Structures are given as structure tokens and as C-alpha cells.
Length: 638
Ligand code: ZN
Ligand code: ZN
Image 1 (cartoon, rainbow, N blue to C red):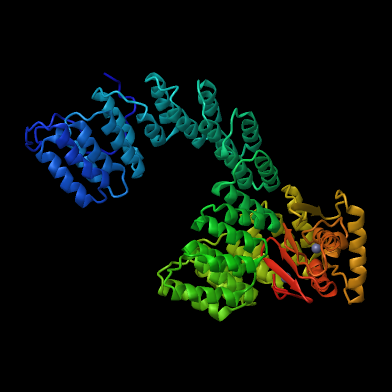
Image 2 (image 1 turned 90 degrees about the horizontal axis):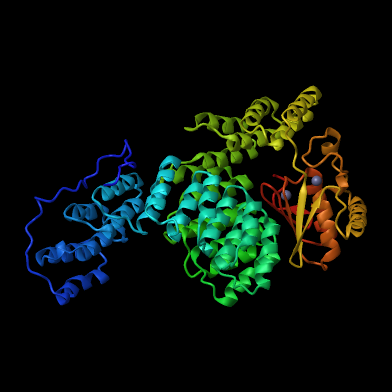
């Protein structure tokens, strides 16, 4: 008799107490032959509904097959774990089985797990043991997954060992996952180090687990140590880099993967597209898109959306629209991606028009759709339209505004200078405003020079996000505009006391598939000399066009870019100089910037687009700027 160490005190009673059935309906005692067996069970193979299942089940009862664990086990399996099944029916059938075997117990346990009733699994397991049914290797994978705390996990681990499954890969791999789930890295290592046999799954689980725990270097060490790798392990490591925003490393690994002639599959393609999105590497992104088309990788909705997102965020809206229009079927995620993309680029009319088309095609919008639509309104100052959609999302579609929607509305009202209305909306919100919502109002106060609301909201935002340097900078900036130098100094002191550092300004530009990074005043680039003389010549030409450096940032020491570096050498100016040096006349220059573009760079880029006759697309922390013929798509509102 096994001991009952796994019963949870809080486990709700479930109706599966096994007594020797006295209430079992009388069943015919006809002994079934193999042929009959087959005749009654084969319809189960094609069964696809509970209606049919019930018919088959009653046949089985009539013929006495219900006493046959093999036959009734298949009925239980259909009900417990198939898509068309019904777990409660499975439990009823289970209750009638006099002596279920391990297969049936495993099926019921797995059914509970998959129905999100994991809390029942361990008590079922205990009952299984109490009836002297010996667990097999299919028992533990579910039981391990069902653990709700590390203590249970360790007990189950002991059982896996006790029942001799310490070399069963499935159970071991699940144990690794379980220990990762509770952040118990020592536990992971105990399992992994003691495994007599490890497969690619064990290694890959280890890599993903370490990466998810933020231990990316360890993950890479295990990746390098793996005796053999398949595409799944390559994908796991690349995906790990992408999730950690280490896009350059992802690219390097991807290159090695190609050298080793490993096929680029759907998953690696999706990860690499995200890496391109992160770096703004349009050329690489295009190459991967081309490769997907050429090799016939199945373009499912998710991958298609990733491609559209890549084109939007790499600043190439035309291609995004082209891919979107070419989709044979559009899911809600592709519509959303396109609407959000248009909004990000300030194409409000197009975003709203696409939303209308979506309505005409009877695709029901969701909350993300409205984030896109409201964002579009906010970026183009469409107050009336914004109110209309904010109101109709509840009235027409029954979607309750979430905090993101309030954020968009506050942004919209704030940008339009309706600060009092924005403040009122925040006060009336059903939920507590977060740093995003308050930050939108705060930003608007800076734009419109409202110190009364701005000071109050700014202080609130700083307390909500004490490590976000941008918030301090903005408040100091606001004080500076009103000549309140003492307050400027206090904000800077607070920032210093708390050890908050400004991230260095950094701009990236891709050329021939290579992404170059520039930091303000940096000189490490091999072409550094040419770049600086190009930047100087650029400024000379701009001055002839009437460019006056916007010194506010430097004098007040309050813009986000480092104060040490002269305005002329802000990272985006260096990136543009590099772009002008290395592209041919008329080519679009695309730049990704980690911070908000400063006013001076914004002015300069408008002029550069005019003087050099170039389109310049800049993605900054908040949005896209399309500079063309001396104008920016943001209409100087960012
Ligand atoms: Zn700048
Ligand atoms: Zn702009």
C-alpha cells in the first residue's frame, strides 16, 4: 500500500471515489469476440462529436464491452482529451469503471490538467496509488505539470525517482521545466546533471529556461556545449536573444546557422523578423521575407502579421500595405497590426479608413483595434473623431475601455491643448491612472507650457517610475522654460541621489545588411573621420539654408542626449552623415533612435531632407518621423 503523501488539504472533493460498484447498470454478459470488438470500436476512430460518442457508448454498454478496460478506455480518452470531448462525461464514465487501469487513470489526470483543473490531478494520483495501480511513464509528465508549488514539485520528483522513471526523458524534461517555473535553478541542475540520457529536448528546455530566467550567457554556454543541435535548438537560442533584445547576437547566430546549412523554418524566420524589427534592419527583413516566399514556408496568420509588423516598424509602410493587401485571408491580428502601423506613422486618415473597411468586411474589432484607431486620432489631433470612436467602442461593440484607451484619449486631448479636459478624464477614470496615462498629460503640459498641471503630474509620474530618467528630464525642462533654475537643480539632485542615469543616445542605421550603431560624439566607427567631416559639411550647407542650432537643450542642460557632446554630433546626425556618405542620390535613409528625437535634430533633419533631396525616416522611442522636402509627417508634434 502506498502512502498518501500528496493529498492536498484544500483539494475539493471530486466525484471519483472508487467503491466496488453496486449501482452499476446491469450489463449484458455476452462475451464479445475480437470481431465484435472491432465493429463497435472502429466508429470511435472517426467520432467527432459527443452525440456520436454517446451512441457508441451505449452500444458498448449493451454488448458488455464496457467491462473491457481497453474499450472503455478509448471512450474515456475521447471524452477527456479530444477537442470535441466533455470532461464531465468522462468522469461519469470513469465512475462506473470497476478497476480502471493505468492508461485510464492517466487519461483522466491529463484531461483534468488540460481542462485547467490541475488542482484535481494530485488527489487523483493519490487515489490511483491507493488502488494499487502502478504508475507508468505516461503518468508523471502530467503530474509534474500539475504541481502548484515547489514543495509538491519536490514530492513528485521523489515519486518519479521511487518508481524508477529517473531515466524517462519525458518526466525528466518536465521536471526541468517545473523547476524553472519556480525559479529553482539548483533543482534544474540536480535533474539535468543526474540524467543518464539527454535528448535535444532536454538541452533545448535548459536553454530556453535559462534564457527566460534572464541568464542568457549560461543559456549560450549550454547551447555551445550541446552534443548535437537541431533546428529547434537553434531557434530556441535565437528566440532567446530576441526576447532579451540582443538582436545583434541573434543575427550573428543566424549567420552561423546558415553557414551550417540548416534550413530556415517558420519559427526561426519569425524570430529573425522580430530581430530585424528591433534593429530597424529593413534589408535583412526583406531578405527573410523573400526567403519565406521562395522556399514556400507556410505563411500562416501569425507569420504574416510578423512580416507586416516588421515592415511597419522598419519604416516601410508601402511594403506593409502590399503584404497586407496580398493576404488571402485576414485575421483580426493582421488588421490590428496594419491599423496600429498606420497610426504609428501618423497616417490617421488611412488608419481610420482601414478600420471602416474592416467594419464593412464584418470583422469584429477588439480592444487592440481601438488602441490603433485612437492612437491615429491622437497623432493627428482628430479630437472629434477620437471622442466618437472612444464612445462607440462601448456602444457599438460592447468593449469596455481599458487603461490603454484612456491613455490614448489623454494623449489626444493633451496634444490638442485641451489639458483641463484631459485632467478631467483622468479624474473620472474607473481605474487608477498609471505612469503611461499620467505621462501623456505630463508630456502635453511640457508642449503647451502649463506649469500648474505639469508640476503636479510630473511629480506623480516620477514617483510612479522613479527609474525612468526621461521623466526627470521633462520636469527639469518644464521648470527651465519658466526660468525656475532652483527647481531644475533640485530635480537633477533628486536624480543623482537616486542614481538614475540617462541612457546614452544611440542611433542605428543598416547598410548592406550590416547595422551600424552611433552614439553621440562617438568615434569608434572605422569611417569615423569621413563621417565627422560629412557632418560638418552638412551643417555648413544647412546654415546657408537658414539653420540656427536650437540651443535650448544645451544651454539648459536638459535634453535627453548627453550634454557633453555638442549638438552637431548627436547620434542621429552622425547616422545621417554616414547614410549620406554610403548611399546613392535619392535613396531613402532610415534610422532607428532609442530616445526621443531632440528639437534641434528634428529641425536639422527637415532641412537635410530639403537640401539633399532625400526622404529620411526616423523611428524614435515614441513614433515615426518621415522627413521629406523640409517637412515632417509629425507636423512638429511629437
Ligand atoms: Zn539631437
Ligand atoms: Zn517629426
